[in-house]
Length: 375
Image (tube, rainbow, N blue to C red; front, side, top):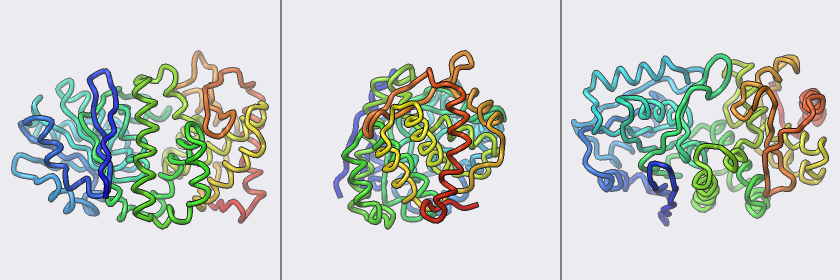
């Protein structure tokens, strides 16, 4: 299989995303090319390490200079206590400023380990080795790190680019089906905001993608990496263009927050959020009905979603006001005028948002089995 090297620009200098089946086999040499490190510290979770640890031990050629630091990677454990736990474990293991942290896992591992790398001794080198689809196509690229507060998602963190990202679709073989399907929500998001041709391909090839066809994934993952790399290279700190990557996320983060990060996989919340964002775009006479239908149909193809929470609109809107895109209490949404394009809008009437919150779950529920929602 072909190994693709995609360059990402950052304020700390450019770094590469090395993507392709078998890429993990080159991990040791790729890391060695970064320089000599006093020690290498793997940050992962028990679940992830049981699934891929042996493969990565071979690829990384671990020695006695290495240490393993494990923590719970549930979204509900993505908090400052986990940061403290890992930092103290690094301290006990003798990690110094010439050490390297390798984040092995999904989005939670990458976000937490990245924040630890940004803050431990005021910054140590970081490499991402993502093991979930959402991390491979999205969260490992761009330098966003952080943890949740009870008041909202990702409210404490830092922009801290890695030195390298190694993405191997073969690591997805052991990924639970629910997590794989959730990761596809971010793939759909990339197509909606930046690649109409890929959206059409997703419509045509979803069956093969869901079967994790190796050839399809080998082309699909680098294509998504390239979209993310182009956006973050132009707007590293989310001051403009990068906001389009949050299509559906204003709704999604609110859904996660009000359910205390226990009901949804992140991608499942994004799936709901994209449908709501499509409806919102249509309500403000921006998104064509045909595009709304295509978006909902493709999201439906991911399978069953946990039920929309039974909370009031006011509770959801209060959670939305904690969204990072909000400015002076004004809600801002990423909407799509047509599939393949998106931008941020800050003049959406609150009553329109309330109407969408009210009818989105009803419309989806009314479709019943056709849209595959469940409790």
